[in-house]
Image (cartoon, rainbow, N blue to C red; front, side, top):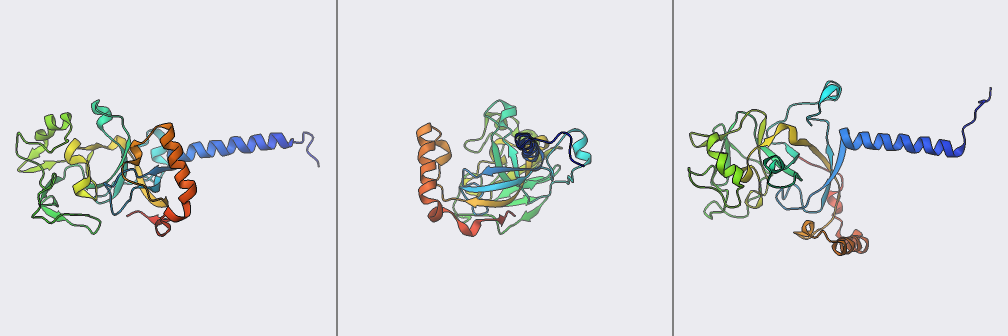
Length: 254
């Protein structure tokens, strides 16, 4: 039997478009989202110009009925996180997305001595850690926390005022519902040592893989004018094949 009300081609196209938009909005809101690495704080795990797909539902803090349907799990020490910079809550800077590695879970005691992070008294070593200087060369953040009255350079005012409240027996204690994070490139990472803990509710998700990696000079993310954007786009068009890091394509983030 034929359809008494056949659909027109225009209606089919419109309905397909609506479904596609709904699925895309749902996917980017709850499932996966793309991010670009702007700085070298996570080298050599993540390089400037790496483009990531981020799993938003594995442990993102979604409210309501979604937490009972999607397969959430607890955040583990050593995992890489994508989160909104907590300075937005502190009234300091916009809540842009950061990418760092979890060092301390709620209740952990964290201390850094000569580049080495100790969690609950045990050294946390990892092949992912990048150190450009030997322990004999002092750099900011090599030792943390500092004695009362001292603070690391570029620490936020909020953190300098509250840091001592979390220090016990020479280690900093991670409060409930928060995480202590650091970049793998520890000598060039602005992280929890300088601005404090990451609240659970600001965590977006976990990087899955690198879907594209393009050689990008440091500081490019600061060039935001229209002419800069046009220049960057032109560079990609001209140098796409020669500056794409093909070996990093579809690399799993660990």
